[in-house]
Length: 534
Image (cartoon, rainbow, N blue to C red; front, side, top):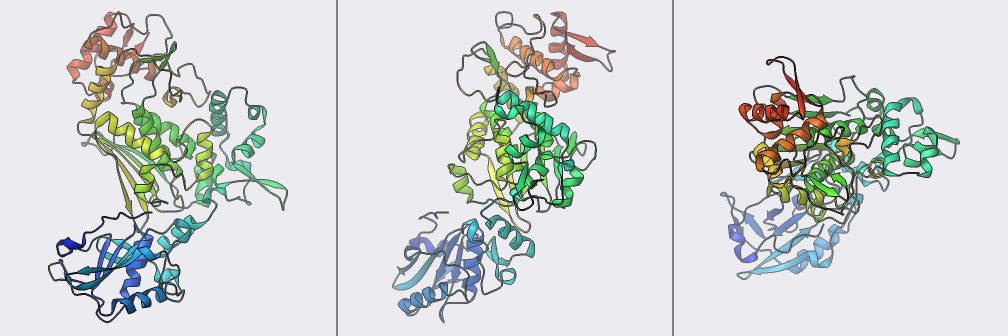
């Protein structure tokens, strides 16, 4: 990762403190051994600057002491950094090491870049397990065996999900999941030549199984196991595998809703988790009414951002790592956590243009059904979609020991903003742009596309009111509620309250009005009353 030129200002050096990317060394007697620990830690984290000839005072501020014979120290440094007995790799070029002058005293500035994943771990001496360091706050710490192993996994040219499982066969796959995937694939690729293949041939084409030339047999790949396997089969290859969705919108209870891969009530694989959770996450998001030709389009930049955040979490997870994938929904936003740190620098990833998923075959499988942004544009899609909708910047955090990536999509009073944004934009517009399918309208079991781009379902003529019939703001809100009921089936008053951020009295008013207009019907007594589209 290219480091910022303005990471520090020499004229303001006395005001600085040591931090995650800045380290001061007095270096009075020459190159200190501790400098190589910092070199390793910066290279294995996010890069940083080492200042030789600068002392840290008791209050934490810097004092320039200067180095003696800077030219000789430079020569010694270059000899050491190129000595494989001292450090395993030299990441520096001449411009990274400079001599600065501060009030007549010499300082050596060493800019250490973040090491490319192919070069990590960067370690001191001959033993990566004892010589690898990382940066945490203002100090260097020894990497655990787990962290070093994770860096070696990421260093391979081929991604970890390409591995052939030679002790397994097709029985590891949940065929219901495979057929759900094929149904959606057939929708995305009408009359595709692969649609005529049998299941084994099809799985070979998408990378779920691979051919072993020595044995002349096909075996499941780790990507196929993750995507389509049963949870108990996945655990035999990935003992730490765990997928967890938690809805924490009600602080009075532990969670409103939860879906975990370990329950044994469903397959527990990545594909089924993605579709179930994508729908749960997008459940409350506004769907402005717009047309593409004569078809309704409900896929917005906001929906794409949330969907991409979920997908990005799943395809970049290190499933050998601890704590699993955890998705949380709060009243003020979402968090997406996965084992494994960024394979490229965070700023580089945010800029886009570089695609380096940890599980490339898994990513390819999703891309084949029109899910996932290519060419490294996934993170910019998340940023643009969320920020344009709510004005708040998504945040990423890389933590270590164990390695973990955390994405936060935050918005104060999210439920109120969701409702106001939707009610203010629920007007008919023409659009001839992106035709990405609305996954919340797909039935993975059948691949039924009848509801795609037409969330109201349009099952009966009176089910969807026209703009002429509903034109004021109240009518707009009623149209949204009507669409919600048409999409979700039978609902309660509490569902409408939660989905649109309404009070109980407001929800009852809108539901009663829709009943009176004959657009929905009420079922059951007052206490247990539900509503459904006619």
